Length: 111
Image: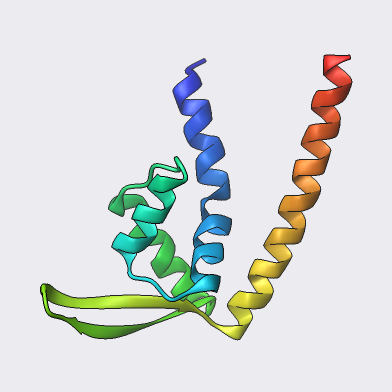
């Protein structure tokens, strides 16, 4: 089994939670989101991010607005909807339970 593939799958599994958490604190355009994720060692490329943002927008979790940029083309800024905030809250609860379960499992196997 390829360890890099396993690591990539773990990152991919939490990507939605991370993106929504970023957008909870402030609206952002995709390059900012990618930069924040890279700073957290969650390497993401545009080809991964854009389809996810589109799916979340189509599901009513996100909205976007266009803003003119002085240094290039207009930027699409994403933010959470009220439904998105609720969805993020549920994801966060599920994540917390998952982390506790994994820690408990790892503790038992380490003994």
